[in-house]
Length: 347
Image 1: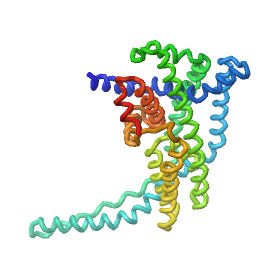
Image 2 (image 1 turned 90 degrees about the vertical axis):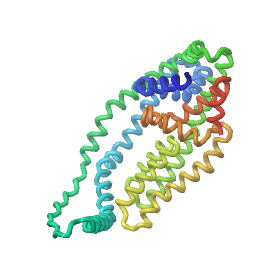
Image 3 (image 1 turned 60 degrees about the horizontal axis):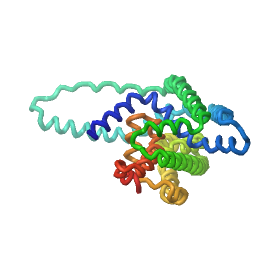
């Protein structure tokens, strides 16, 4: 029965991701900005509707300003990326051809050992196909084709965020009343407030840590002579919100670009190696010290959760995985029948 319920929930989440993803993003942003709106209401006598409008407009302006400032470097990077990947592929051909020749010789020896004594007929080797030309326009077109969907999702999230901020705690109170697992409604409200506090601290602390790490990465990439060091810092800030997978993507992409850019093997290895050192120090020393007791999650459970939500919701699910896992843990710790889940998710 439990397995059937889990499979049904996973199926609903998978096929309903277009509906659920904006809602979850809006709930997370509501947890982040709700104290700000509440503070404006208490200290400045600003109605929640007006405070929510101020927050949403500020977010929209901030996103637009950042997008405008980074549009030039990002467009140049997108146009140059196919050429750099193609250059890396050409360099790999130098190592691939000897391996292919050895394989061909071994294949011919094996064929000769099993062939009849008659002289084999020689066939001309087909002419190698010319390497494909870098197609930057195809990449740009592919990215721009998704811009409408992304813009629509952003508008949906901001609209839902405004409605949540303007409604105050009404939505969560109504949600608590209809959830049958929580019979003690007052205790349930405390759990919800605790969840919001944990999510708010996590998002703020993660943003500060990622910004510091992105700044260091950008400076190191500039010192090593990598192209577009500002974008590498920005990618670090964004991708480090995805535990483990974000760092893996960064190390992989940096390795490819460094291999295409530099001829010296030491210089090439220094690029991903420096990022690996920085992210290891951040995850092993800085993050545990700053988070302290506020967010103690099982690393294995976090990795499984990231992979699970990535499978269900794609890239947005990977970004939402840690806040969802933290929320599930807090709720599980206060619901008797879910306490084994909370024990597994805890450190």
